[in-house]
Length: 244
Length: 296
Image (tube, rainbow over the protein chains, first blue to last red):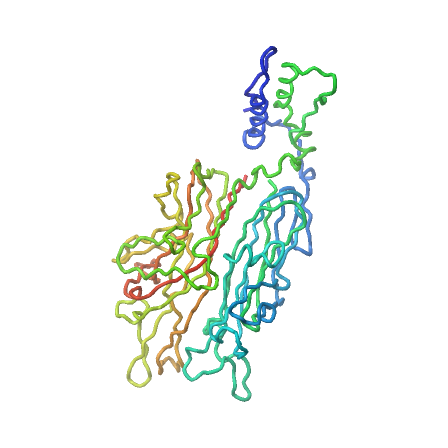
């Protein structure tokens, strides 16, 4: 049904803002959801060449079009990255700092205010770490937390620590006769028990939904680690942004 | 789109009823043409944040936000059937549900409603895994004329979504479409068919492995490893087949312990009440996010 202004003005009567706004609002509603096929000209008047093609942003891995962004990055075949306690408090139980995980961020150029969904996933291989320096969590209880951040990595703690999920270091406490998490027999190397069995190979994912103003913004992953070495074996970060 | 080509109002113009009416009458059926829709397109500033494509987005934390677990919420294994699901709460009795306000959100036929959640969890196995009634318990020959206890490693806690589509009082939560409440009776047990778990995500209830198995024999006792804190995450989407539905609330709930079960050639996930006795699941914080968007 075509648009019909709800208010008609007559000479000699008071013109109210409500009447004007009412007509404008009715028009807005009509344009957004009221247009039906019969309202539109039958003759073809739009071709694919008239539709704004999306632009591909190769570094961020996203495409950008009229309605927003879509796309992201992942670890691909071999693009290992790491978390480490040496950047986040040396394993001290009281520390709460987060640092960016290298490579796992997406920076996009938002042309106007919008809503963004940041999707992320990662696989962690944690430890082993049996270092004995003081003030640390007990060796079997060391963990790594990964949380999303928006803007600065520090927001992973200040704003998004409720999103944090964790992995725990390779544990040997349950295996009879095993006292260290790595092989000590000459000629053998590596972890003494498989990482999944030791609870140290973990897969996690999450979604952060956030509104943002226009400008260059960064979404990424940050970690707080109590473990000296956590390999982020596989990971992926993806963006959906909606201008409309 | 909607660019009107009337001349702008200039100094000296008289603003009367006729000219005002003309302003609103300008957008007529004939204006839905190539100029207004094609040439002007709809990438114009007046459409900022109109909710034209993304009609609703909402995100919130759930559970007890205590990321280093100095305190947490603990849920015991369910033994009395049929059991009600336990809504994720903050440990003080407040369910961390997502409210959509007094009017709710309207999900229409041409929209897709997406939900994502995650939660930090810690499963404690308890000691009834080798109860004779536990669904995953069996024995292996030990190679010396005896047997050793073994376990399928199939026990899980299940997290899934419930919504309330009745009123903003949000007292009538039910499992979301495509998701069972695990109260279907299957050969005397309570559970759900695999096809009815579209909003489910599971957490292993334990991790028990064979120690030094040899040629099909299990000469040594199996070992229960420590699972410790971990994460669980799930996703669900819904497209309305016809008409509209108004959703007033959404929440994550937990049930357990469950175990895979086959009956009549069909696969199910059912309550394992024997193993549940003494087992528990602790949790802390997580997140629940929804997106509702137009798909055509």
